[in-house]
Picture (cartoon, rainbow over the protein chains, first blue to last red):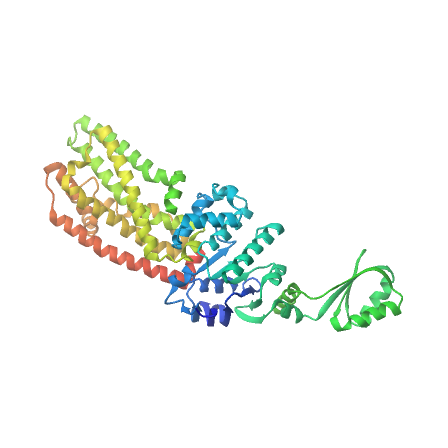
Length: 306
Length: 252
């Protein structure tokens, strides 16, 4: 098997005069977790749907595990699985029935055993005989994810897989996905609006905007393109002095009852701290927040809108 | 398998399969009984009504059983889940056909028993003719079902009611109860292109004369085969277009 799991070349999708995905090329290597990010309407979902053969591209080539999607779609789909918070499962079927039907669709060997195994892994035993309409959205998300493990896929396409889970549930799901990935060497294409989640689990991030690839890097690399840090202080004496320091240096400042926050380039931090000492500003707490992927996302989205 | 699980728990679908057809049988049977009692019509009138309705149920249910799985998966927002598995369109259709035949068999047995208990109508009165008649009527249901599936893929939920209503476009021209000769000229022209009209003409012939026309069976079968091929090509084309225009995704 090829080491490159997904190879996309010049992928384009036009709907009439509107271009949803505009000549993008990227690859995903074996065992890699790639985050597909971008503002709403960036082309993330259309890209995933083209990778799944649900939408035919206008131009370009998609190769998955070395196979051409156009010619070997069913073969590829047998080695892939997909989960989205935005698709539903037949709600009159029980959890067990839903998983069993999916196992049959993937021609899984010993489908009943595999369903039992996945139910155990995902902690679904207590709800396995309940119909989907009896479950909370958190449970439904878990069932949706459980179905992606059934055929032991080599590639998982996960569209906001933890969207409706509480923090503990989301953490548990991420842990299971990472465990599955480690044990099976699966590659994952992951879309999410939870930047902390993407930072935590993705090896690389592809940032899409208006159908084009805007940036590709590690989450750390993308976050590092933002040079501005945020320093928050609990000022005991000298708020006005802090304001004049910030104004003099052209730094953004926000002063509230409890905290005062200054935004400045990372390299200016020593200068800022010196100024605090020189002007005798007294503070009881200080925190320095380095830029995160979320800062990159917000800053980039803002730039794009402007 | 998935639709069998669904069917067991969905009262609407069970009602579709049994309830309306039973109501038709009971209502029209009683009406025909009344006409017979008044002595204003042929004594075979009860069998004519019951036989016509029973055979029409085959067309209606086999068509609906082709359309309901697609609509069910769309309503359940399960189409994306389904078509991201290795399933092919032809396998999906084959599944709906097998399930449809199973459900149709249950429905027809149930109605035949009801008709026998209420009106002493024995479906085997048609003898050997029952086999080609049933096959042809199932084929009619299928090609109309494929046509409607194609239209649903093309136009989405806007035309979902076609799954229940469209079949009645051919109803008046199929001469289910009255003969083709009772139709006006323009309607007779339409009925000549409908496989159903030949089947129901034969049904009446068996009831009144005990004979049926092989030629009518062959015409019906030939028309059905042409329509099946055309409707499958149409549905396949619409599926391909739905993938191009993201209509399958939107239907979800």
